[in-house]
Length: 253
Length: 321
View 1 (tube, each protein chain N blue to C red):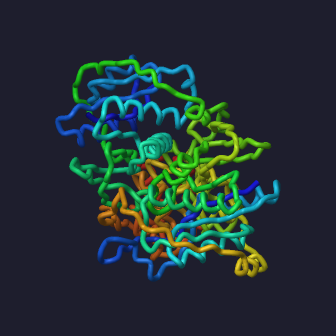
View 2 (view 1 turned 135 degrees about the horizontal axis):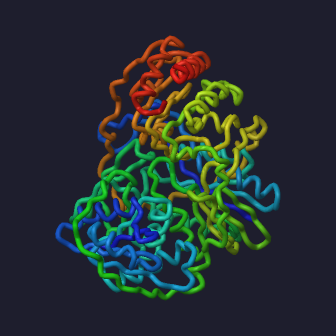
View 3 (view 1 turned 135 degrees about the vertical axis):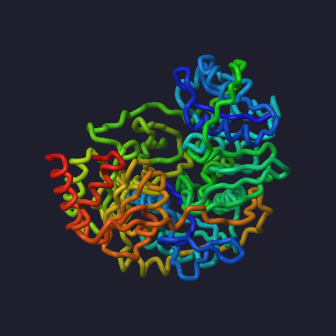
């Protein structure tokens, strides 16, 4: 069972988003970076599948050179090797999917066939909800999205998706593409030996050529109504009567 | 003509679909808006007409008894080929985004997910949400047709007073590959008799400030008194103190209560993306400079372990009086 997990480097935005003066990006000079929460669960699930079933695990990202940090983080958790598609700026979903498909084709040409390709349901930052689905179509594979449960059963995979009424179950043949959501599992923490091993694990770097975006970002803006007037009801337990008065006012009592 | 994918049940059209129809009418100018629904939509003809759809295509196929994202997309693609709409629009629900992503993949066209605005033109320009709504992006959508979904609860549904939509049956051609991904079973949720986080009128959440799983005891107590649902921040689920089903936020549950009480939560943008639907936010936090304080309507500066039990005592007193 060979598993490929696709992740995206995103800033840890903290309490407030600040934009660059040209309104083209988030000001990240003072921010750390991570991967989208859904993808953390994809990485964990890939490691668990390989622990149970054997086979290989690979993590891929399209992003700046610095995204090596996120690939090493995933390898510290047990992923064996990584692929970095270097892109200096943000690519749209269509272009990202094409580059990933090309990388998967190149892997196949080199003798590596992936049985399961995993994505997060949507990235934390751009939230396009479509890269995994586009890759699945290009590869001619089934795609199940938003999974909170995955069980590989022989040559099939049983998938559980959360819906308002409960969970919908899909069973599809491998090879397949799945996109997952946070809550699928509780990701492990990296160990120090894991971090040391990750430094020596293989990382293949290539530079796909940037296409023209078809969903073209013009500018970013912060939503109106940020930073509202906050009424301080009081300090410590002495504020309790004021809170109860508020609860009465909103009909919560 | 603009084509809108709608969800319907028992003669009614769901709220997000009505919002998508209103959005489409805004983009259409004088152009017609047509609806597409899977299943027998004739009972919904009046509701669709009132929402501005002059025509509705009711997709009929024996294999579409349960949801199948690729097959739904294939239906839309076949209608696109027949009708050449200028835009195809769906609600920004999980399923709406999923089906439209398939449509984009099949047609090799871009798809803009979760738009709050769109202006006609070549290209169509859209405003869409990033970071679960904490950031907006203006973008040019270089696609024909323009494929997009509508961010839930950003457009008001509007009654046009239009008469019944003309319902036309549409039988798609689906092959095995289109139906390979199909719901085979529904496991009903075990609600446990409690209030669900998404529907609760009052939600009380704890964050890192609770200190432990046991630290939720005063929050549980107050929630019990108020009939509230208990939520938590991502820091809490990562620590393993509460299950992910309790998590409020961009990658957890999005809530819309009358009042949200956030205890010991710093208020990262990802958390606020999940609770900005609350009519009022009360933050209880030891740190007056925590982001949650600036983003709340009301605040109490203090330790939740002291403040929350005092509120419970005061609620009992108010009830006893």
